[in-house]
Length: 323
Image (tube, rainbow, N blue to C red):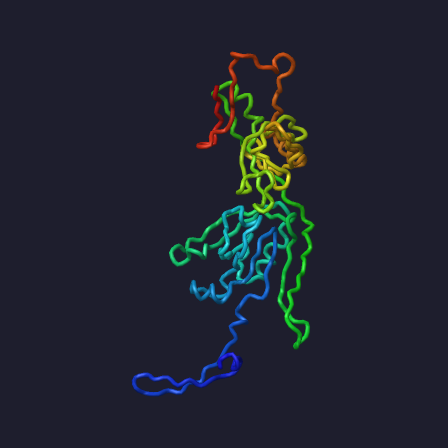
C-alpha cells in the first residue's frame, strides 16, 4: 500500500486518550536516501552516509562520508571499513562532492590529514580519530561512479567519470633546522649513525607475492652510496617491488624509494631513494655518508673473530651495538 503512495499522502486513524484522530501523512521515498554515487581511489571505496547507517547511529545524512572498503590510501592510518570521514586535508566533508573537492588536487605520494569516527563502535566510543594518509594514484585513478538513467523510461546504469591527475608535484622533504648527532657512546655507533636508515614497505594485501600477509614490513638498511641514494637491506624489509617503500634518512627525513634488486637466494635487497630528495637533504647538511665496505683480506671473517651488530632499538628508537 505504501509503495504505491510514494510522493502522495495516506490517511491514518490513530487512537490517543480514547479519541480517534484521522491524520494525513506524506509518504516519502526511502530509496532517495540511499547513496547513488561512490568514489574509487587507491583501491578504497567511499560513498555518502546511507539511511540505515544514519538511523542506527542517530546521525544526519550530511555528517560525513562512509568508508565502505579500505584500500591503499586510508588503510595506512588505521581507518578501517565502517569509518565516517568528516575532514580531509583541512576541508570539512559532509557529502561525496565535498570529499572529491578535498582530494582532487592532492598530488601523488603526498601526505594529508584525515579526521574520522569508527562507526562500528560509535554508540560506545565517539572519539574523533586523527591521522595522516598518503595519496596513491598508481593503484587506481580517482574515479566517480553515478547511478543514473539516460531517459525517463530507461533503466538506471552505473556510469564512471575519471578525474584528471593534478599537475602540481608532490612536496619534497625540507631539511630540518637541527639534527641529533651522537657525540658519545660506542665507536661503531658513531661511525654508522650517518649511514643507518629505517625502511617501511607497504603493499595491498591482495597483491602480496613475497610480503607478509599484512602487506607491510619495517626494517633497517645501510646507505652504501649517499650521492645516488642506494641502500642495502634484507628481503624482509623490502620483500617485493610491487608496493611503496619509504626510507628515513638521518632519523629526520623520510623519502620515497624503489626496489632495484632482490637476490633470489640470499637475504639481500637493494633500494634506490629519490635522488632529487636526497640531493636536497645533502645540500641542507643532513649528516648522511656512505658506509665503508671492507675490501680485500678485511672482507673475510675468520673463526674466532668478534662480530658486531649495530641497529635501532625497537623500544626507544636509539642505536645499539651488540657483539
